[in-house]
Length: 230
Image (cartoon, rainbow, N blue to C red; front, side, top):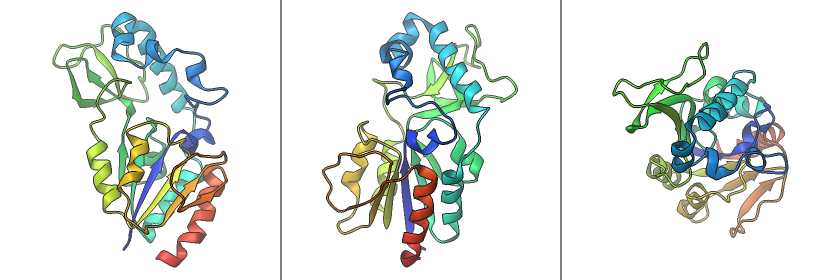
C-alpha cells in the first residue's frame, strides 16, 4: 500500500466555517499577531489571549467536518494516509482520519506554562480556559498552541513522513508559513505532488499538479486522479 502524505492548511477547514487567520477577512486583520499569538503577548495580557482562544474553541464546537475531510478518510481504504496539518482544529479526527500530526498545536488541548510538552484534553462541555486555572504542576494553563517564536516540536516527525511518502498532496495552504512550507524540499525526485487550492499558490516547483478548487470539490477530483496509483 503506497504512503500518501497530505499537508493541510486553513483552506481545508474554511468550508466548515472555521475563521482563517490570513486573507481579506482573516483574524490577523482584527488581532495583531504580537498580541495574541506570541509568548510575549501572553505574558503582557494573558486574559486577552485566553479569551481569544476561548472564542476559537467555542466556534470550533459549532462546526462539522466538511466533505473534504471525509474524502481524505475514504482514501485510507487504498493508501497508507498520514495527514500533517497546520490547523489547530480537530476536524480531521472528527471526520475519522487515523494518523494526524498537528504542527501548530491543538485547540482542544491545554498545557502548563511551565511545560509545553504535556497536553491536557479540554472538555467540550467546559471549553474555556480561565486566568487562575492551574495545571497539576501548579502552572497557569495556556492553549496548547505553537505561537510565533516557539519551536515546532512535530516538524522532524513531519519531515520523516514526507521523506518516506510515495505521493504528496497539499490542500488549502499558501505555503508561506515555515517550517511547514519547507516540507516540499523533502519529497523524492519524480514523486507525484498535487496541490488543491481555489487561489493561485506561488511555488518554486514546476512539477506540481494543480487542482484549482476548494477542499471538498478538490478532494473529490483528487480521489479520481489517484485511482491509477492504487
